[in-house]
Image 1 (cartoon, rainbow, N blue to C red):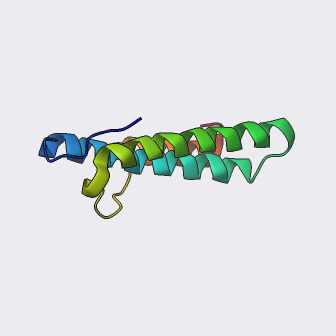
Image 2: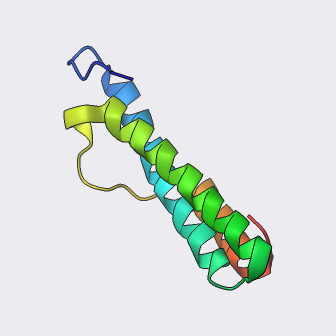
Length: 91
């Protein structure tokens, strides 16, 4: 899949996509953290979920092209969900 990285993207799109990228990265890290605490099939499922988030990350990186910029902090919602999952149960 080839995506144009021309300057036709609006600043709003770029901000939104950069936020999506940050959230995908945080979610993948959360799944990997949970997988580290599990064994067997549950461990494997969580690692596969982390891999799926990595594919999503690749999508946003491709869309952003030269507009990736420095890493952003994930959204409050994502940070809260990852915190709750890693401290109290599944993500």
